[in-house]
Image (cartoon, rainbow over all chains, first blue to last red; front, side, top):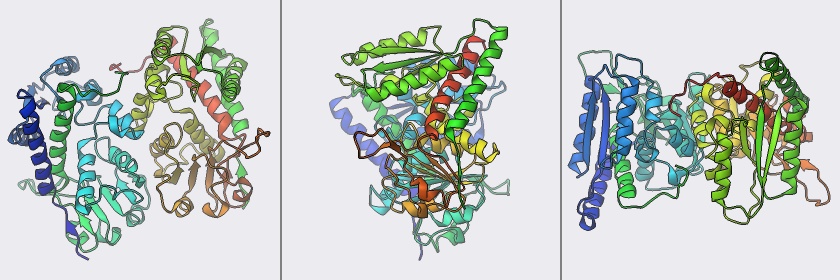
Length: 304
Length: 304
């Protein structure tokens, strides 16, 4: 069997194109409609600059708007909090994300600051209230974290089946706040039977071999081998690892793709898989919240 | 093999005794110290009356205090919300729970009302912010939901090993907000490899057979049979099912206990297993929050 390589690059273009069309269509009725993503950057990490530019560029390309709030690395947690609160109250801002990791001289608790984001502008889906909703399966009211959302979208699109996850054995390697934990919840509430594995799991290979859908997010280059994969499985590689050569910008996934593609049924490559989907879902989330907030399509949520 | 029957009745007495001793000891230094649980009841279901009386009685027995706020079944959601907000601001109340199910004539969204409870008084651990924290493994800052907390305590005590869960295969049947989902998160962050099964899982028996720790919370009488259990497993039965005979008050678990005890290593009975532990953990949670709030042992949590 040779796996179908699931191009996140191509699917992300599709998502972005659709969002662009929706924005254009919305403007036919509401000419001043905007979808504005605010990116808060503390310091000046060069990798962050690359990621931020990609997000702003993709947003611009489809008629959405982006705003970079670049703050000095000398900022305090108190001042950063005030910036977030101001963005919460800024009527021209639809989505707010904080670019991680923070590059700062003072100690700042990123989780505390992220949790200040208005849940209705939390387009990365990383506030605790969003995590709580997702954990409880309140999907209608949750903003899905972008990377898990991209993973789900790839499965649904590549298989051509929106209910593909239902009844499947899903194994997630890693339990991070940004990928593993929310991916487990998202696939659970799409009715997969989900197992979460981590550094304390003694039999990772055996666990992986059970997976109809294998989501790998542990940050170790080519950790998952071909003989860990059930023949025909859908393998989603969320890894972004740099190689040993410091002069190369080449990145590697958590899965040994070349070998794995002889076994898997579907495989997302690195680069060009989950990465571009994450950006596309961020822009999509922002548009959805802009539509809801600006066009008065309110949540039924009266406890906020 | 004949399973050790893990008496939640006995262990709950131990927990309550310890909390009673702590209250007494706290009062040596702070004579006016109280630990007050407020129970909000809407309507007058007879089963709710039984549960509420048990909670108030157990609290009183160990020197804690309880307060019943009994509201008519004609109350509106708006009025119920105002009751909750008043309790949030009541300096003499340490913990607030809403007895479920609501018995009301008007439509009231229980989740929305529960979410109004101050997270620091949410001693049932059922607000979204607590669910979010638990999902992300922020254990220091989470109030554990009482039933999952009781399950964990029974495993740790009966095995004599606080780290027993680590590295174990944990299978949870059911994904409810109150038991299944938070139990999965709690056991995951105690380093079990956790699988969550539910109505869409096609091979429940096979899943259960992998479990070193099997947590059953699906609400179906004797659903789990002896041949679903891995020899020596720790089986935790969270079921509370009434039998077919309407004149009998006898309750049944989700596990066929009589047969299962020939296979399992440890087994919690119904009644007298998880049920009494839930009450004990509620009173313990209330005491912990009272200590924190009244004695000025504040959280580092500056985002609330």
